[in-house]
Length: 228
Image (cartoon, rainbow, N blue to C red; front, side):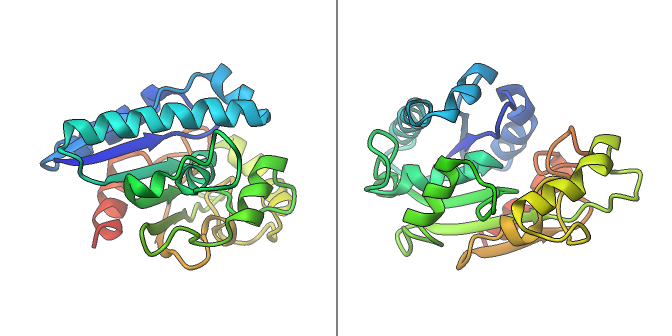
């Protein structure tokens, strides 16, 4: 079986990723684990200790998945901030207790709408991009960036996305009219050097519209491309 471990996005709890996990499991010999992260766990990631705590949980989940799958390398999927954090997990050095040399256990990282570059990034997210620019663990690890395009004038975009997207894009460093998923512009979601998959009519998460990266109709698009 192919082991897959999912780390969600900031303040998004496990149940949001269950349909995606069930769909992946239904594609054949795929063992899918979603790392448990409560809203409190995410709030604690404002500190380095919170990152260490959550990424050590990732490491436990990865090792359990490998044991179930005869030691096969793990595919990591990170949504939003989860994708940025998993870049740190893969590294040998960067932040003690959070850089866990996961590249020895994993061979692919798929990032879904992850804000890799941002002018106003949090201190820890900025640290990841400074210490581990681009695909820092290649060629041992394949990196895939999935970026969404959401038409804010369409019925697919939520009222929240229409009100907040322009400001979000500007804070990250893009223009308000640039393409993005309602929170993260494509220019930020693309990790330099990675394979880029762009999805039309795709929101960052359910708060921003439908469908989003975890919706079955979108998972069925990016998963085959990420593994081709």
